[in-house]
Amino acid sequence: MGKNNGLSGLEESFVRHGINELNNKQIIELIVCRTVNKNECRRIIAEIMARYKTLREFINAPVEELRTIPCINEHCIISIKMMQDIPSRYLKEEIIQKPFCASSQEIFDYLYYSMRDLKKEIFRIIYLDNQSRIIDTEILFEGTLNEIHIYPREVQEKAIRHNAHQIIFVHNHPSGDPMPSHNDEKITRDMVFIGKVLQIGVLDHIIIGENRYFSFAGAGLIEKYEDEFLNMRLKLDMKRGCSSKVEYI
Image (tube, rainbow, N blue to C red; front, top):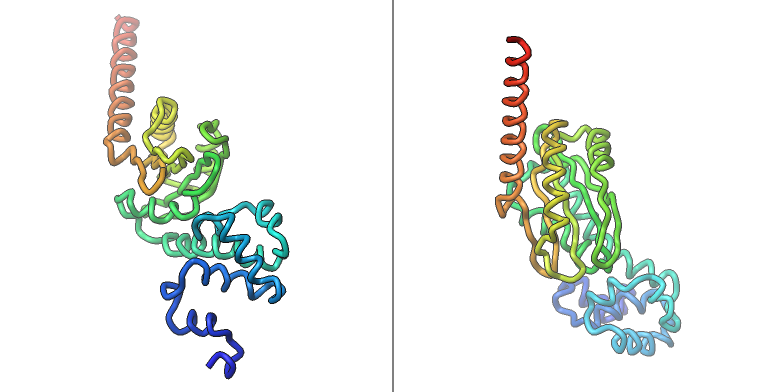
């Protein structure tokens, strides 16, 4: 059957039945052996299987690391990285301009694939318009394994440039534990306060870990920070009112 259409048996099986019918070794062979010397294919597959325990680990391997595999060429590396990046683009197209769902699960599902295997912390912003539709997303800050520096002024400047009415923050914990640190809580509180002043709402801050996430909105913390801001502003207004009355008398 493969001889009639130029496909190998493995390629024919993939076309007819999809990827679920293939094991990890066959999937790797399908990606790699179409772009390398056929005589080297078995040796390359054996090297890959020895280096990487899972398909996920192989697909997410850094380019510099892939280049150390004997006989892997640049065309092959492009195929591997496309396997990693295309699903992220597809998910982005699925969510852009879609009415925003209040569930943080949807945001987690959208970003988990592209953020789960990162070796350093990144801070991403999702911008929403006045209809609560997602305008765009971008990575604004990058950090180290367990630390990232976030600058509120730059966050708000970006939000204003995007004409965003609301924003969602997402960052990852490479350790796999999504529970927020004291600094995560402080920066989120500061962002909520600044957003209130500039009239750019903070809908959520989601921390992505290993197969799970933490939502500040889901935990009631966004609402708590908003209440703290309103109470602080009320006290300030009352204080100003009292001062004005004394001066008038």
